[in-house]
Amino acid sequence: MSGGSGRERYGTLEEDSDGLLGGSNAGQKGDDTSRFAFMLLVAGVVGCTICLILLLIVSVGVFRRQNNEDNWEACDGSTGDIAYSPYYTSTCFAGTSESEWAVTRPPLPGGAILLTNLTLWDGTANSDPQADMELLIKEDGTIGDVGPNVDGSSAKSTVNLNGAYVTPGIVDMHSHMAAYSWPDDSSAANGANEMTFPNLPQMRVLDSLSGADRQVGYIRAGGVTTSLVLPGSGNVMGGEAMAVKHRDTYRPSELIIEGAPRHLKMACGENPMNTYGSRTELPSTRMGVAYRFRQGFFEAAQLRNEQDQWDCGNRDGVRPQSLDLAPLVDVLRGQVRLNVHCYKVEDLE
Image (cartoon, rainbow, N blue to C red; front, side, top):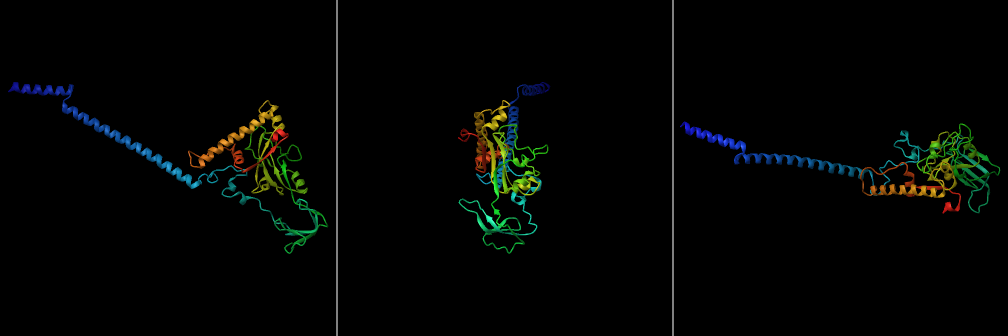
């Protein structure tokens, strides 16, 4: 009994030892099953994680697309963008349009005025001065009517001009007043030329206007009612001009003519050549000036094309922007007119 018991015990130990050293078939199958189950669990976790990531990406894409569609019109960059503005931007103007914060004329102190016995020259082609005319100036300072017999019932006063000439206000299309102020002393404004780089279309003459320029009153007294104030000609691309009305004010923002066409100042030839040639910098020749023109408009055309692609649906990220190139892009889009200072025929060609 004891021997049989020992053999049984030996056999059991042998089998156990066999299992420890090489493993029995049943033990191996159990281990394989455990490993397979673990691999399935890991694969399931990884798969779920990938699905969650993909779902998140799709959700963000749908949100961004919906947000873009809410703020942009297809193929139209005119809405939803933080657009470049040639005018003053300030928190005090937030939520208002340019026309809403534009200057309103104060009423005439004495009310409407009727001018009589005047000689009218209206400046039209082949027109002769017309004598014995009348003109009504409304309370807001604008012209109400003009002719030989004007209804002056709304006038608070009447002035007999005794045949004096009345003409339209003169519009000066090339001025530097208030940017180069008078007299030219230590307190004078001298900010019409930012001559630190030849291509600076992003400059705005508005930012250099001085409301304390004493020559404005003399200009107004000479019959000039409106001026297009331009940057100087020291650069190839000097910056954006500003149309101003010669109002009696010290605040440059109150000189702005709301809704006036935008203009950009550029210059060919000697002025930019002298500015940068004296420093041995580009441009020092007309070749250099022409290159700077091509360079500026080439870069602006690239930005315009990128904006057009974004506007038409290829909206990867935010809409392409450049404060430096925005005025040139607006030139290419026909939104800004050019004033180019030239000297010779080759500059014009």
